[in-house]
Length: 486
Ligand SMILES: *Cc1c(COP(=O)(O)O)cnc(C)c1O
Image 1 (spheres, rainbow, N blue to C red):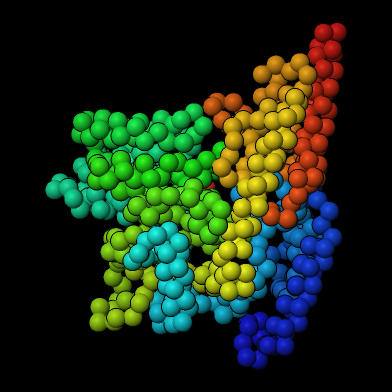
Image 2: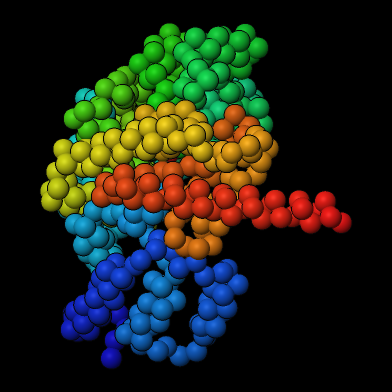
C-alpha cells in the first residue's frame, strides 16, 4: 500500500476525491448559516482532542473526521449572510483547477520544474498587463496583495537606491513613501520590513471621503524633498479596503511624473474593474503606474491564493534576481520565474485563473463584480433611508459602512453598539459583518462580494443587526436600572 499519489494509487485517488467532493457538496447543499456559532472553547476542545502523534487512520477516515471538525464549523463565504471581509465565493472551474494543481504539485520557480506551466503563467501575466494597459509589461503571481505590495515597494526602493550615490544605509534612512490614511496596512508593514525609517510613510491628506488629494501629494513630495528626504514611491489605492473608494489615479500619475517618483497602484480590491465593461474608467490612469497589485482572490472570484504584481518596465523586476547554481545557472536561457519572484517554490495558482478565463470569460467576471457594486449601491440607499441607521460615506466598490442609531441613542452609545452587534451576530453564526474605524469612530461594515446575494438577503442581515442592537440596548437599560437601584 502506498500513501502517495502515484501510478499505483490512481484508484484510491479517484475514490478519495469522490468521497471528499461528495462531503463538500453535501455541506454546501446543507449550510443554513455562514458559521456554526460554536464557541472558541468548544472548537479548541475539538481541535485538541485529535491525536496527531499516533499511527494514521487512513485517508477516508481522516477526511470523514475533518467533515465533522472543519466543514461543520467553517466560515462559508458563499452564504448570502456572509458580508464581513473581502472574501468571495469561488468560481467553480477554479476549484477544479485547484485540485489539478495540488495533484500535479507543479512548482513554477524554474522552467525545468514546470515547462508549460511557466509558459501559461507568463501568458496570463501578459493578458493581465494588457488589461492594465502596460504595452510591454511583466509581472509574477504572488501569494496575495500583501506580498505584491511589499514586492513593489522593494523594487521601488532598489530603483531609488540605484539613483543615489551614497551608502545604502544612509539612502534607506532618507527614503519616504506617500499614501493616505486609508491605504492598506501592508504599506506601513512593508516600509518596516524594507528597513526604512520609522517615519518613512508620509500620510497624504484626502478629500474627506478617503481619496488622496493630488494637490496635497504634490505639496507633501515638495516638502519632504526640501527636508532632504528621498521620495521613493507613491501608493495610490484602487479601491480602499474599508471605504471602497478609488484614489484619482490619473491626477496622481501626473504629480508622480512631475517629481519623477515611482507610482504603485494597489488594486488588490478594485482589480475586477479591469474587466468591467461599465466601470473600467474608474481606474483610468493605472497604465501610468510603474507597478500594480491585483488580487484575483478578491474581485476575480478565485480561491486563495491568487494574486499578482504587474510592472510596466520588465527590467524593474531584475532587482530581485539572485543567482543560485542549482536553480538558474548562468549559461541557462530558460525562463525561470524565480528570477522575478520573492518566493522560490511557488504554487501554480495561475492555472485557476486560466481555467476561469476559459470557462467563464473576462467579461462575465467583470459583470459579476459590477453586480456586487450595484448591490452595494442599493444597500447604501436602503441604509440611508432608514432612520435607525446612519450611512457613512458612499463606496465606489462593494462595501457599506454604517452605524445603528436606535431612537435616542447618544453617539457614544451608537459607537458602543458596533462591537456588540458584530459579536452577537458572530456568536449566533447567522450573519457575519465586520467592524472598522472611520474618522476615529467605530462603525459596522458589510463587504459584498457574492453576485448571487440579493437585496432581500442583505435586508435580512440588516434586520438581524437591528434585533441585535435592540437586545443590547435593552440589556444596557436593565443594567442602568440595576445600577440606579444599587
Ligand atoms: C486585501 C487588500 C490587500 C492585502 O491583500 P492580501 O491578499 O490579503 O494579502 C492589500 N491592499 C488592499 C487595498 C486590500 O484590500
